[in-house]
Amino acid sequence: MTDSSSHGVNLPAVRRFEAVGFRAWPAAAVTYDGSWQVRLTAGHPSRRLNSVVPLDPADTRDIDIRLEKARKRFEAYGRPLTIRETPLAPPALIDNLRQKGWQRVEEVLVMAADLAGLTLPDTMDHLPSHDIGRFVDANLAVEEAGLAAKPALAEIIGAIRPTTGLFVIEDPVTGPQATVLCVQDNDLAGIMLLAVAPDERRRGLGLEILSAALRWARMRGARTAWLQVVAENAPALSLYRKLGFAESYRYCYWREA
Image (cartoon, rainbow, N blue to C red; front, side):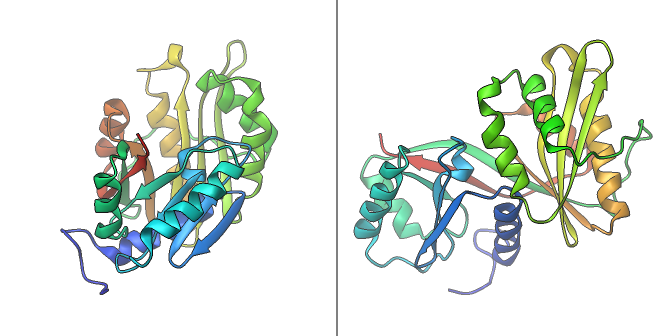
């Protein structure tokens, strides 16, 4: 394996974004089988927290044996075996899954922007909070999710090791309107959990809270911002591209049919 680009994708950049992504959204249990990272989290169903992530295109030994070993680990957690395919995944593994009839689901774009060259709109600024409980309550309200998810989400955010900024826009009468989590990992700033309440959309709140988070990260010395967005989320893609984010690479998941 070499560090040259593969199909137009910069593999060293992929490795770096994958590493910061793991730190920004930490799984409860992480083990390795060769270069395959096995991520499992009993309390949260997120695919990013419950998947096998191969990290070396050349690591193709004993694929069937390793898949079966991984399946047993996932079964112990009550999770379906899920493989996350990034540009670092071995083509032989993906061919193996395809031949066995596995299904490819949820394509996600990883996007990045040069913070130094980013022209942020002159929107209202917001200071980050460090109150995880308040942020989680706000995010669940905005996402219209049940409170049953609160312990797991609070545990995930509490386990993030790099510096975090928790941003919330609230109305004193109607409550939380928008949230975003910014994770600053040295010169990289990751944008997570950006959400706007359904009744508050198309009012510029997403742009406002995202701009506040990016300004905060830039003031703290971050030079590059990154985020992940589902390929079918056209409104979010439009917002990110308008700000200057461009696609770095894509990934998807594979599950047994």
